[in-house]
Image 1 (cartoon, rainbow, N blue to C red):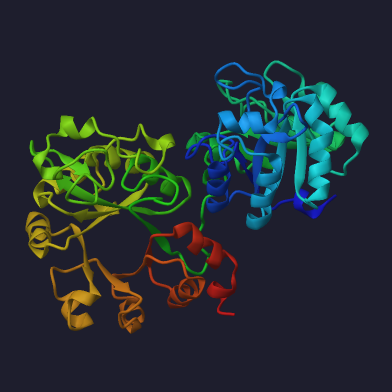
Image 2: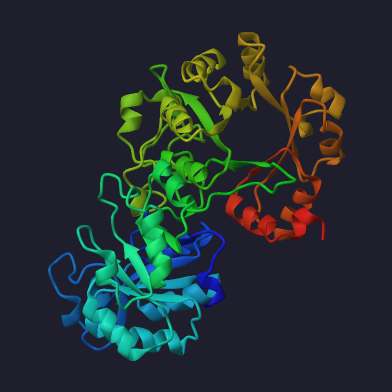
Length: 476
């Protein structure tokens, strides 16, 4: 069997790309899938009237016109080529990002042209799938050298319908408990009959935890980062802080950006907290609304109801236009749900009020606090001796002076600071954190060699790719 078909953990198959963060089957969704660490991208395929394989789920456009009745030019006069790309353009992208192709062939007449394109591009990692057994038969006759996956709806015997396919792809996401039938007897029969298994698109974190330990080839997800979340190296239990959330795939300081971080296995989300004119606490970086919302004016001059009417995501993409400015309570609830941690930067939010809300959610031990306004940190320390405060090394003349300010639990270094302090803090009871907003692999390696307790990153997914390569962690 081909080596890539025997993975050590399930392949992460981005369902229509990272479709939780961009329009399904769009080039943006496939680019995000690559950024989020997907192994393969699932693409839905149709054929235009003039023989071009295009990537879109439905057979018709929103206006009712059939893809099969349109030439490629006519199609792209109606929809953007980035939203309904050709398979060729997706293969170009996949080659750049080393992504495998999981083809869901919707139209029978797209089967042979798909095989020809994959072979023309020299694609090695591809799986050809379909719901229609007749398409599986066409693929068998074409014999392109790629494994075939029979997509199996609910209520159908998977072994019967997938008799001629190498892969059983279960589309059971709508079942109340689709994991229950995946028992020892099921997998024993798969082994006897030489079948591998790919699972439906899953976005529930609890169910995903049950799926990823099963002996399956792959798992589809709109959130490909959820399939195989980050696990720190065994000899370096580093915690990764995501600066304003996963802001490369979702708008900063939103629930979508925070959720992506936790789904990816990162420990902390960094958030910025302001007070509204009516005394509520909201999460937004700037003191004004213009950059990251469709509003104008100062955050602290607006009431919560007015702020909640704004879009906090339209500036980022149409896909995120429905994102709202979250309250601190919204983010605390999300952190609790995901068993996540928070780095809370106080902008204009009163320390006592923030601490009260953190305590209300029982998250005192998993939150730490910082502010450019040192008086807010003094207020936080006055409120509680137990609050975990961070101090920045750059704000003090020495490490000793840093540690002498408000009894911090954490010291943050930048790559421009004297980083010998990272080693000095080991075993002291005070954690070290290195903050870096760039994505230079060499800087990532240098950070990894220092082995701080935490890293605060603008590009956490890029960092993970570097340290998982092994050389930076092992000291090679």
